[in-house]
Amino acid sequence: MKNILFRGLSLKETFEAEVTAELMIKSNALIPIRLVRRLCGISPTEINRRVESGTFPKPTKLSDNRKSKRKAFYLKDIHEWIKSPHTYLQSDYRSNE
Image (cartoon, rainbow, N blue to C red; front, side):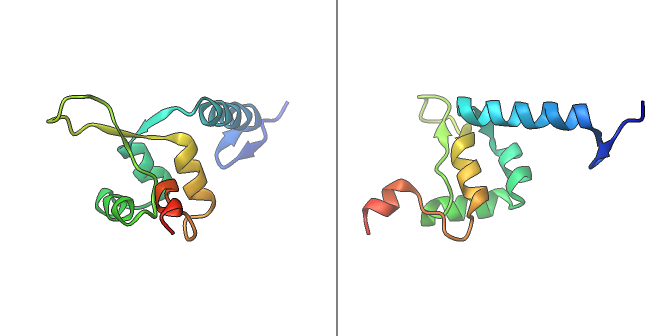
């Protein structure tokens, strides 16, 4: 049987990747900024600018320690941004309008 390829992946690998992505979105996994940068195609500096202006999801701090800089984003928020990056507004910015 011949393997059908889609974007360099077999049909089985494509299906598994789609199922994994859907499960991650439903479980609202936290993802690091490195992955967010790759998914969204924008730099960390641009991500920070957009967070400050309310046009990108806010990250979650991973520690209560004040000095901690490690942050992650909820995948559902990033997914919403990817679906409509030009019209996205953080929920607290929406309520201020």
